Image (tube, rainbow, N blue to C red; front, side, top):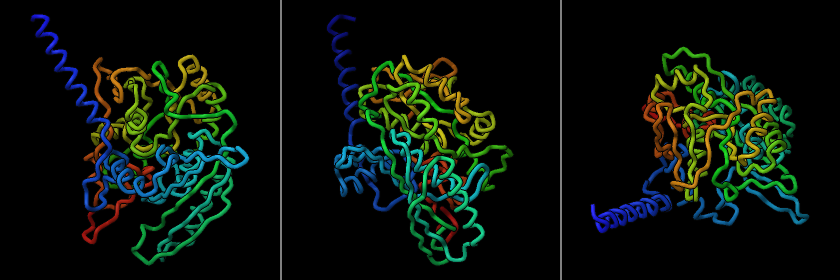
Length: 395
């Protein structure tokens, strides 16, 4: 090949790469006329809905950050984190937890990974007529215990009752406020090449526990939800690794979606190592049987953190010293090329792109006739996305 031919080939390659980069950086487009389940699944459809409807209507500098919590400054100079979430899950109680625990833990965790120390919660309830008072007492007791164990108070709330069939038992909305210590800042713009990707523990338990608890599938697996507050873990990490750059709890769409949110339009890539991802054998076996990637299964007590390379070992050690952080580990790194990409180094020596999910995994279609939430998308999997039954019984 002549030098001219080589130059032409290189120019063609550059043009192709430039087009790919422009395509990746395009704003998501909302093409649907009605809301679909995909809009709640935490992938590209969710991003399109948020961008085209909510961000367009409410646009401001804080909302544009699209973080787990808004970071607000008071006139006295104090910084607060402010977060809200709505929770639905069927069944309302599952191995390891309940909708009440998830509603408290989820908002506490959103505040914690934003760098705040959670202080106060509100709780709003939408309850279906005919719901047993005994069940309501149990769920509220779960919430009280969950808040107390995390050192948080539930200080205000609201209750609404709707007619039979107008709600799937009950929905809960919690809003939280936390105080950010002086000098603490966690932000994506602090992430840089060479940083390490840290995971606080095993993944996939919550989503699989909820899915199996519905009894839709003939799989015998002893899987318990990981729902738990992470604020103590976050404080332990930040104490040992004060230069930690960024954090996100791996709920909506799991670790795969969290990493794609980090990498989107960023001047770096996130590289994960398959062999280092901590997955319990029972969870891995159930995922294999269903053709589901554990990277996209929701969690309720785990987070991803980007830490400075010289603080990674200390951060892991601090997490492992906590009762809920025994499986914490470094699972990847930040590299400069190719920007905006999440890739997985496989156990076979190759690599593959970890894409931002466009829709729910096909395997979740198995759940259509049962109603309930989507354990792979925004579910908090026991969380933030409701699958509504149609009159035919289909989702």
